[in-house]
Length: 476
Image (tube, rainbow, N blue to C red; front, side, top):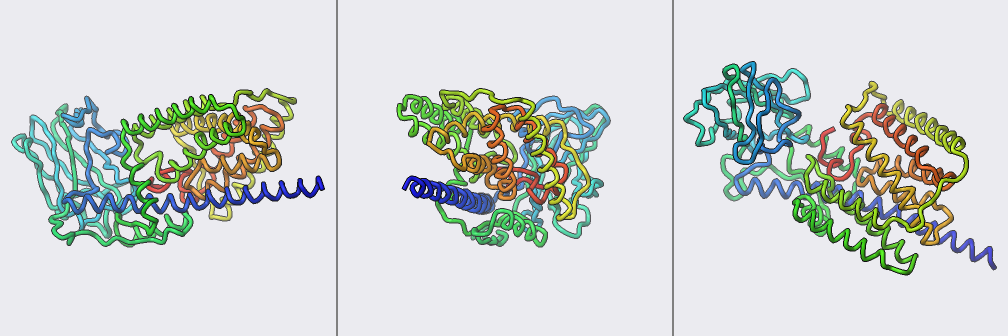
């Protein structure tokens, strides 16, 4: 009788694991599709109002791709915009398109606002691919008396000859040596949007496709005609959630984060250990997964995202288990097993790279490397010191590494390919943590395998290992 009851509990645990896996897969699919539709609707509203998603406020650092070339940034503010000094008499600025193509038919008019005490010339450089040598259009003259009104031009007269719509734009300026220029805004507009007659057609993709397949179809369509306005048939409630996250401001993020922290403080008073552990996992794991699936963090980065992530970390710290695990066993054994796991993982990644055509070895830049290593440390702390103890408090013992691995892969929503890899890795690292109770070996293994994935796998396979809104909208 005891064995039969034990087998029944084991089957019930496996059923729960399966339901959790299916729930994460559905959340990834639904979240990706809802983000696409939210983006399409936002751009529809802009077009219908006679505006355009192609608008750059130079006071915003995210308006540019990288720093201005051959120019010195003197200041950046909402009132004066981006103030540059041109030591050599010229400047070159990349305009961020976030993976979109410029629709020359839907937004054929360019408006430019700038200020300078002396005349200058400017032109647009553009290309329909990502070539480094970007061809430029004809020079345009600007005079100081034009400073109080935006200069309007026909986009077709500014662009160089192109065989397709541009996927990169650069603003080039030529002036006197040492001349100062204040750039305020540049935008592309439709001529008229009466009765929505000038809107580009919106394409509706089936939301039930897996995220990687959905975005591959979106990317293929972008090669045939310019973005934006590729939406999906996602349910209205899911799109509403994605729209709220897309428009989240700093004040709203601080308010939501404060409620998160207050809920964590209230939960610390819960006397029932099992109920406290379940609610802690809901706040510290379930809610972040929902935000990731529907668009946080966003691309380009937003201050509200950083505020919400910081407050989530505070809530997790408050909700940490009361009895922290202690190191057990020999450190040497833990390092040996972590090393063997890493070697096996790298061999698996090499096999994937060979099966997908491989790629030339490429290493991340210093900033991305430091950011990644910081997240590795936080994720391993979360897995070993938060998730595992709370799962044990719920009475889960059998298949515990698999439960932890599923929750760990949920931190990589909605990137379904990356979720599969992190499920395998998270389960293995949870197993190491349970065997040895030591953090550094699995942290080193995580860092090594993550960097190997960056170096070995094609960017398009896991979409540059991005998550949240960056997975859906970030260019590869």
